[in-house]
Image (cartoon, rainbow, N blue to C red):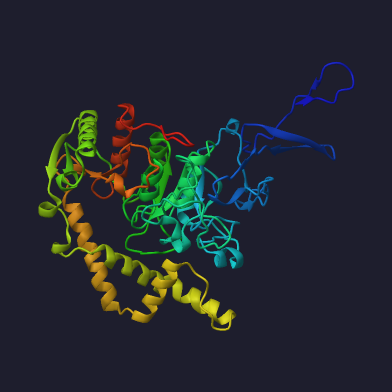
Length: 473
């Protein structure tokens, strides 16, 4: 330790002896002498949240019980300040957690002002969060999300409106720094995408995915997202939207960080299979290409060739109308899935939430955003029977089986192919750069195989780390 207050000459250096029985991280510390003892305090630089991405910044409680405390501080422009340990500490990746997961010591808001204002701090971490903490990641805060992880005003189809208020009344929605800023990032993992676009100090975000809640905002923002096999990681003590489809998710700017976290999170899962080699074929939906204009089609064809060369796989074009799942074959429709999710969330979450609010507020319906309020009222009025729900869940299962049939494993691989899902650029906001969006799908439980594929595409410079700020590349 250097004593800068030395009265004579150069500062004095005092050697310190640390208790080797305690696990003390490397990195910058402040030292304070008290009652003959020297106390060390970790240094946390404070970063302003300029895009309304965060519910709160947080830091581990100093008593070491595993709980976290919020930092209720703002700068002169009322931006929340997020405390982040120095990278000199040698700790693991810095991540933020979607505000539907329990983190010990923090209130779980579920994107709802009512939950945020009246909820109690979680007494333990969700199973999924504890698994990641055990692998060495750092939690540096919680990110906003759409109300009860559903749709809402800040994920309109065109995503082209300015700095608007959403379900939080006078709180603004998370927004994107891409292009000239102030635009939507999609949802429901809106805060995760917004934070990764804005914050260089952040490595990744932990999200959820029921029907695109990770992948859509990642696509809007020029980020990488991953949805694992359903059930790969426990969703215990996590807000339920559709139990048959809810999964955890990951988002990052860097494909290498994405695969690092995937291996940390999924490698010990009973639903993760070990592969011995990669598939030999890439399936590409010819129907999607036919619907694109010639310029976009040509660019996608170049991308397909790059992926094929990097992975040493042959390309097979298939018609989804003839070979894939479609509505004529009994799969669940988009409208049917939306009704199912809202009916199940009403059953599992909404009914109890509304009844408790009505009891405390003279029978009034709680103030909710349009999507959740309308959906819950519809589910309540319809009074779905077990048979109705079972019919929809059977259709959902049929849909999954038809998709999985495309990847049926052969004798040498756990997935005979990967599916290259080409996303139409018109699905994304106008501020997106001209880079393409494509998803890779494979058989269930092939998380580590997909991680290897991502690593190979990164090594071949097909996938690149994106930047924060106005431009992704």
